[in-house]
Image (cartoon, rainbow, N blue to C red):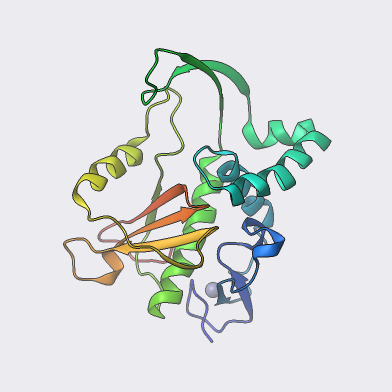
Length: 223
Ligand SMILES: [Zn+2]
């Protein structure tokens, strides 16, 4: 058995996504990959942080909402410090929803997020997903993009804009996954015929999409 990151002899298995993404009653058929002792470092704090960010986001399904109410809110009530640690500064802003039919200005909250932690967790899930599907390591460095996390001006970040452009030309994705209520994924072919150059779309709780872009002329995996 070989490690999903480095290909060396594996000594343990790792869940992808991590177990904490799944409510207790939805932990059948979880996906695992083999990993070596070096790449099986404990990232459970990062996994929980990212789980909270995703579960707090709008547009997810009831599974995310229930999981959020049960796990995240409880832990925030117990420890307001944890809320601050998860979200950074809280400041109230007023935001006009582009999809709203009325001219209502809605109060909302913005918070600073730790993109490095999100990217680390997402890269690991992406590499594991590729390894599981193709039986070999993903030989590219990966960039992580999402439309769901906005920059400070409430605009999409650069990758968010790239996703919006890609959505106009790609055919609608067909997703696969053992636990679709929690996690689904879809590999999208680009002009290149090399499977390493595919774009990977990962969808959490039937709402939150993360796009994974392999960087051309790079070799990987690189965490
Ligand atoms: Zn390894």
